[in-house]
Structure formats: C-alpha cells, structure tokens
Amino acid sequence: MSSPAESPGARVQNNTDPSGRGRQPEALETVSKAGRFFAVLAYIVPVLGGLVGLALDGRNPLTQNHARQSIAAVVALILSFLLWAVVGYLIGLVPIAGPIVSISLFSLVVAMLIFMAINWIISLLVALRGQERTIPFANRIINRVFADDRKATSRNTTG
Image (cartoon, rainbow, N blue to C red; front, side):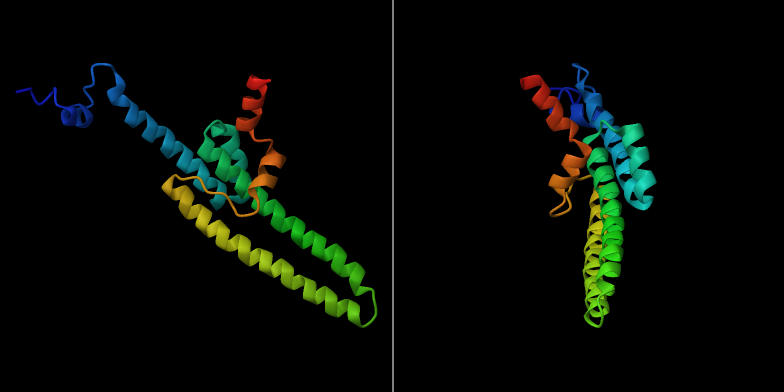
C-alpha cells in the first residue's frame, strides 16, 4: 500500500507535489481574484474603474474584457443621447410633425438605456463569478475600438 502522502488525493489536498506544481492552483486563484476585482470595479465605477483596471491589470483577459465592455457601454449611452439631441433638435425645427418625430425618437434612446442596464447587471454578475461574457452586438465594435491585443499579437507573430 502507498502512504497517504503519495496518493493523488493527498497531493492535491496538501499541495505536496514534488515537481512544484502543487502551488499553481493557489497562484491561479490569486490572479483570478485580482482579475475579478478589477472586472467588478469596471462596472461599479463605470469609466474610471475600467481605466484603472486596464492600467493596473491590463494583461489579464478577464479584466480586459470587462473593462472594455464597461467603457464601451458608457460611451455608447452617451453617444446615443447626444445623437438624439442633435437629430431631435434638427427634426424639431420642422413645423407640426417635427416635435412629434423628435419625441418618438427618444423612445429609441430609452430602449437602448433599458437594454444596456440589463446587460450591465448581467455583466456585473458574470464578472463576480470570474467569467467572460460579451455584450450582444457590441463585441466587434469593442474589439475594433480597443484594437484587441490578443489578435494583434497573433497577427504580428504569424506575419
């Protein structure tokens, strides 16, 4: 019979792997906790939290994903409101129908706000779990705006 220290269960439980690999799960938990912290911070403090996460833990894919999405969501909401304000003002200059159309267009801004609020809550919960999730319809735009480093490095190494 083998001793308890030599059994596979004992190695995992006591972290006594002779190759030194027994401590890796703890190191991964530390990285994942730091990544989770910055991912959640990106949603709790919208733009500033995302920028801090990218600056301090920018190499962590979890932090990158959630920080980029958080910043992009806030920018999209601001741009949609500003676009409505400009277009609504110009359309509002048209007599009678202009103000009606302008007010109707505001419903699109409200719909986007509701959509992003639901995604914000879901993404916050996913960040708390330490998982990556993309906001529907926004992943391509986010990767283009932020020039996804993972794809850029793979392109540089292949060509």
